[in-house]
Image (tube, rainbow, N blue to C red; front, side):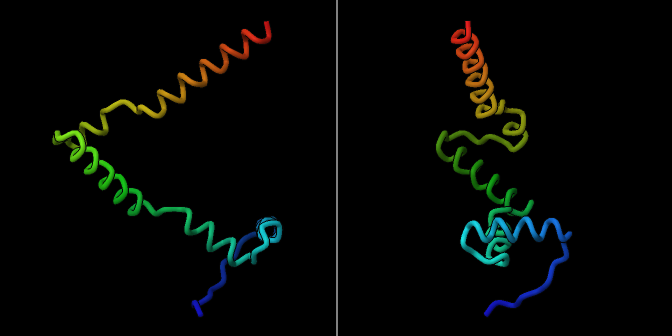
Length: 96
């Protein structure tokens, strides 16, 4: 059995989380465990970023520095921006 401990939250937060857990068919402790597992630490994020960058370097066969990665455009954000603009344009045309 895992070691358990107590965390202190407001009564409102506890009641809200208890309701969410109930609706999902789990205990409050299980819900908190699940939520904690889904939140990476800064160290885990840095490790994942380093691993992802290494894969990119290996796949394209070019040694790109971390500084160059940091200066590169955010492709996913650009795609999301373009898609949002197209959706607004399409909805505006449909309304006209």
